[in-house]
Length: 511
Image 1 (tube, rainbow, N blue to C red):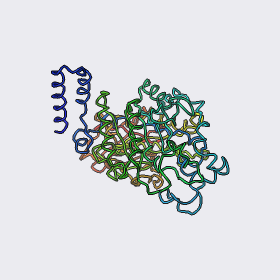
Image 2 (image 1 turned 120 degrees about the vertical axis):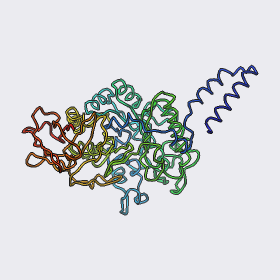
Image 3 (image 1 turned 45 degrees about the vertical axis):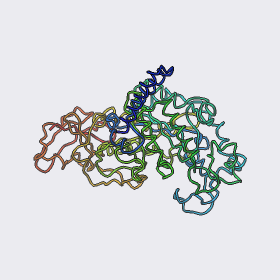
Image 4 (image 1 turned 60 degrees about the vertical axis):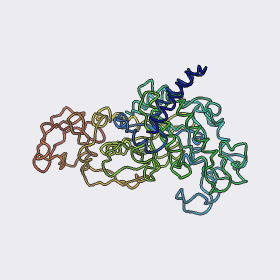
């Protein structure tokens, strides 16, 4: 109602000014026309009323996340190196679950490898971040071969360095470091190859990211635009000046790159940003209308009610859900067990683990956003490439059971349970041949066995003759005739003599 009233007032104002012979009538008409697109007002009531999860996102199922930045130069610990290199005491250990006394390992490593944090600070890594081997076309080609349908590069992390041509900070990849518009090159190349392109913003936490002490360079006012203007008081609330800076920076990213997906990291959920959340959601959604496309806003703090249910798409970091969520959702995780950004001791998960994760997530109506960590020079390490290509090979055979599918009446069956919530993936066990996940599409049911069953035979208890009478069973990737039988208790299927692929195995069931 408020929208209609405001719109009416603007129209009446336009009529009045035109009747008075205003020289600004053309300009004002453009303002009124633009205002007519403002469907979303900056409050949750308006956003809930008009928002609908875009169906296109739920159909894509698999995307690539990219953590690449100045933190890739030291390649130690993780992408949180710029924070931890200044942790000379246990100041921040509670949040980081580092329940120990004394300096952080990154602090000691930095002092021994690069020198004192007063004379060689994080800012001094920026000229070393050259990305001399970065090739957007090669990256996008790899992501296409992996079977990914969308790509979300980190636009700016907590460190404050923008990986794009920023109009709000000098600390950006065009004016410093690589001297290239990394995000822009990826967007152009990705969109030319049919990929959906998004961006992630982690900048809200920049306010409290760096430890401020006189024996660090973080207190030097010359670098406050990188290290944030916050003082040494750890309890100091986010200032209005910084919130405006966050707003201007985020709007600059939205306006100039028109991301199809905008992903927010934590800290935007704290009370200090309460007024900013509906404001940025309304701004972005209205921009989507202006651009003529449905856009996706994602946040991983659904549990905190930072963005109420029905206003964004929920994201889980390094975790999954135990059952079906009827609204779309997403897991973001990394190929790396121990880091998101490239580090010298990077440990990769296996392709089998990640394919199983993808299958489990999709069966519960979710998407998987899988992270890669390129080296500082812009190359993606071979072990990560191999894993992506292995996933792509599996999807080339079994993708029909993943893309554009819907969840079934049950997500699956089997003995292996999945841990719930953020950062819970480390608690999960390997799936077995008795673990099955279901998807459906175009009248077909897909039963995906997470491992090859013992004795080459599987009994699917969820497909009972009394409920779903089967007429045909095939295995994707195999031309072999599949023997099967069904009764009131289950569907029993004998496996072909040869496996069609190396990982999860898909039965296509017609009923």
